Length: 183
Image (tube, rainbow, N blue to C red; front, side, top):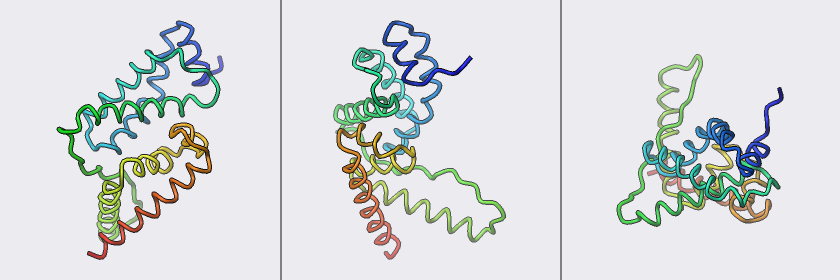
């Protein structure tokens, strides 16, 4: 039996087959968790927001047309959930440092591991200093490896505009990183 695409699964959910929602959840929970965790640095909050995305997907399943990528539609929903949460809790939420990325270095000496760890930490701190909009486009393009056409769909802009936003965000990240590195 051939595995159903995400779009096909969501269309089945839309038509009332709620069992398919579990498959979508299993396929995408880690990606969504990573997106939220890179945005806010809080594991338990990220888990809650992942759940909120799937609740909202169920609530607005009627808006899914099957045109375009399910992933882009899901991340647009995730983006809205994230903004709604931080708008609602803006007084109690403070930016936190993004956790260190997981990595593997084979045959590396201790000095290069420490240098790598320092660089990753500095990149994470620089990423945290970006505006949420720029951080979001970098997370989608670099961490989640989404295509610019999908990012454009998530952000509500053209593919070209998504590329420009990503380029500008990388340029700003580089500037912040170099300033932090030299200080």
